Image 1 (cartoon, rainbow, N blue to C red):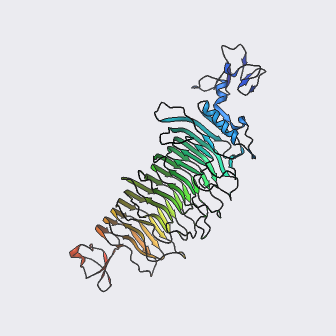
Image 2 (cartoon, helix red, strand yellow):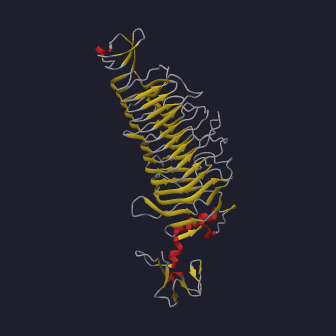
Length: 532
């Protein structure tokens, strides 16, 4: 691209020659020799470029060093960064550049503004916080700053009627704690907290050592992409740590949040120390529309916690595709260890979809996908084209104690149970209970040991279809491959089935309890197949 040119303003008699000022230099927002920068125009050498003043061009991008930031890592740069942010907001928006360096902050950098958009109920921030040189710009949270976020975007004094904030970009930054062994106490002290914000983009950020790295409170219509989040200190006791939190704002939910190509890790657990890992990698409490694509999520008691505990909405519309969900080994004293844990009271029409994913569990982890107890999973759960490597209990367990799930569909997956010292024997691969419609088809299973059955249907399953599955067990291990109980209507084909007994020979023919081709135990305990 050719160089931009400085063009003489018609109202100014000072001459501008070629691509530079004659005997002049730029200082601050004015040109030397007392030529006001507001009197000199600037135009980029591009076809669609518009003419603007040099003053306007200089104010478009602001550096924190313009306001006194040092970037040494030992000097408190909080005030300088805050002044740069306030200046850009007062000017109507723009970029705040954080040049390469280490910037110590001792309190929250607050981004708050009250300029109305044409859209009712939305406030335009129009600000970008950008580092340089691919993460060479580091924000370091002081060890003495223990309560509150590192960056806070939203109303300073939030109320239920506060206008929503918009147009916020964070890019090319590294944010970490000054002393890894002394992190903030819990997830309310996130590195970045967006509160009541829409239209945001967080791209190419690296987070380290936070009790929470990103908190989105009623903050939707946003994209988080190409980010890396890690926790490297494992012996620190934090009871309420979550790497990403998506929650409500006075009971109001967010929607349309996209995570793309992110690597979010929650640390390696210390054996028998329940607080040594995050409670979850992502804790999702209130959202309508969450997409995760091409992400690697690792560690924690739970990788993805879908927690519909906010009764007036909860969690709905979650799609996870092409992701790797990896729970590493540990011995954590809880019975709810799972890659995906669904809890709380869901909204009608709730849909969860997992496709083309890898679910990898460690030595003591109980479940791949778990939804049980008082959970009301109302809607659809679909798991397809995914790989499960599991150890202790079921790969998938959906067994709500109250309202039925409308549809659970498990298709074209591969399940491998790996033997470990903590493997519990006589457990099924899949347990489904209190489900209106269940479809289990096209799956393959391999297990060296510990499999009681392929699918176990508990009470409350109205209709089930089980077809074209290929369960495989090691030689000499003679456990049932499919067990069913409490199923009102079912169709089972192309795979062995072991139904509860005892039945007299072909006793199921009259009652319909044993389909043709199904396996059952007769009154002597002998396994037989109904042939007619």
